[in-house]
Length: 206
View (tube, rainbow, N blue to C red):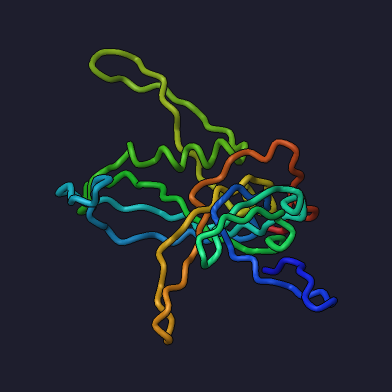
């Protein structure tokens, strides 16, 4: 990613590093692998002594041209804070993911983790997916609860979102240099965004 600069009367392009921020974009990919049972941990990483299983909704957001009009800030290698527009981020594809924790059956060796589905519920709401309700009996009372919908490719492909991007897990390249990575932490509504042509529910061939 580059910025325009002028050196010795000629225009050159300087590297503009990726940075955390909010990007306007569209979901262009969805994968839904099923995890093996895994140990749950608290926010500090301490094991909770129980296992859960989830279906992951791993998606990819492609940054839209409208992001060119937004403002971003990063620090250069000298620690100087620099502000620039988002023109060089257009087309950047950033990955994200959200788990949907499953309810165990009598034959399963994992436990339920309904409180872990808040992020999945917010993801569905952002995508405008209808969340049905049903009535259950608990402690002699009738309660109305929300039922988690099953997201499909038709629900998400081409959908406009505001992707909140942050640092992921850095890695070390063969030269021993730490390389930062970025991921979509979560998505919010893009109020004026339009779904990509050819990706509405009626247009998709499956």
